[in-house]
Amino acid sequence: MEGRNEQRAGLLYGIGAYGMWGLVPLFWPLLEPSGAMEILAHRMVWSLAVVIVALLVVRRWAWIGELVRDRRKLGLISVAAATITLNWGLYIWAVNNGQVVEASLGYFINPLVTIAMGVLLLGERLRSVQWAAVTIALAAVLVLAIGYGRPPWISLVLAFSFATYGLIKKKVNMGGLESLAAETAVLFVPALGFLLWLAATGESTFTAGGAGHGFLLAATGIVTAIPLICFGAAAIRVPLSTLGLLQYLAPVFQFGLGVLYFKEATPPERWAGFALVWLALSLLTWDALRTARRNRALAVRLLATAAAAPANAIPDPTPTLPGPTEQKVT
Image (cartoon, rainbow, N blue to C red):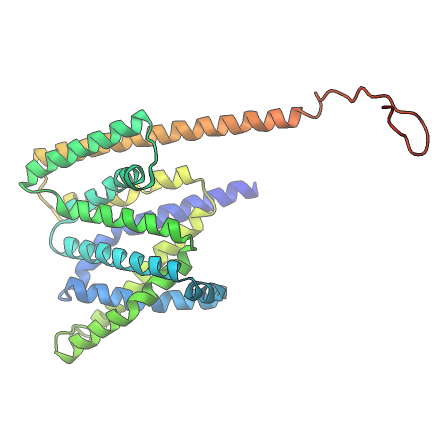
């Protein structure tokens, strides 16, 4: 019963995390007239403040000394910070410039880009269904490029930057809260410097927009941290396959907001491109679930074989002589 309650809680945490990421396009327009770069800088600064509070609560500090002594890991964290900066900044700009639908496409194709990077960079081998999904995704990008009259560069940059970020995070192998703290610490000084420069030149909107506007800019730290904390809580409670399915909630919500709330244009060729992407993701999901089911069945069989082995073991045929030392006859 306890395990079932933990899984239910993990599912709710996961839905909460991806649901918040899916609804975040509603938040960024509230920060106008702040530009994307100013919003991004505030997000970096206030995110560090939030994660420091979280670290004070959980009392996890030992990792800082280990990270500072490991130059390779520190370098990877710096690259991860630069990559997520590009991703965050472009996404905020896209939402505030009427490109929510194209931004959502980036997170739809992100799993496919991750698979492609695994093949190209890590030498991973794909199953036939995965090859089919990647091929269909390439066709989708071509259809969308024809429809847009240009490559869907916002989607591609978002997908590749986030896939690269995920690859680096895998190599760093740190907890979610710790890695976010390290990344925002790397970004804090340049972000704060940029905000001070805006204030010195009279371009800052932090105080010029009133107390309410300043509070919303400060809330970017909470908007960043809370979904990540929920994601971390979900990751330790539900299977990876469940998280893989939940990740599609965010771009689905974003796409729905772009079409229904922001009223962005969706001509037939754009629908065709998205339909191909959804077909590729359906194949990918079906293959992942089938593989997970097979692996579970194999694990059960192996456990059953291991459990039955002692009962079926052949007894030692060598007789023994009675006595205090029970020497074997040789």
